[in-house]
Length: 242
Image (cartoon, rainbow, N blue to C red):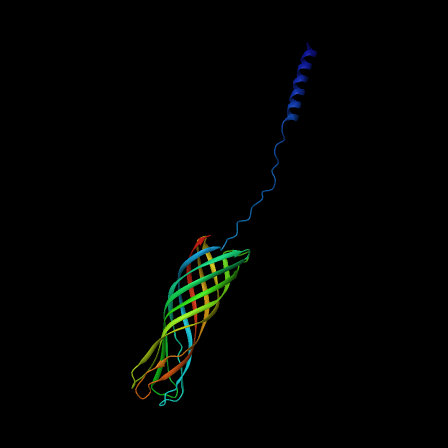
């Protein structure tokens, strides 16, 4: 009887050992691998609004009438502008290329005395300006939501150039001038579908050459005015991903 009991106990112990040996091993926990967040992509269509402050450099020579010899004027316009822009960007690896058109209403104005002609003054008031720009930027891996860029293209301005004195009625002429523009800026993505930006732009419009009729004694006073304007703007854009 004792031998039978020992035999049963041995058989149960052997079966338990065999069952434990056949059981699958518990899975080992490996190191947790954290995936890096996806980089922000600047590829998008966008549109928005902007406000800026501009300054100008206008130093013109006026002459050609028999009563007046050549004389010069220095009048630097300055003031605020506001408007809107639309554009598109395409990101290729770390480079971002784009195109943008913008139209702004502006109130840049300035006036200055005319040298060699006491009592005369010349003034300029910009009403509109528009730009068409190509941009190229670079995204740094450690700051994917920042986009510094350079810009260049064409710029056009519409303004009024006038000459006046106490004894002669004011004579003015609206002028539209186009030239080249170059600048730089930086945009920051505040969300996947919105960004804000700062930009500096320099525009050179060449010479404005109106012909003033300021009186019977000087029916044809012409002006040659090299005009250059700078604009500092802040913008807000809504982005539509491709």
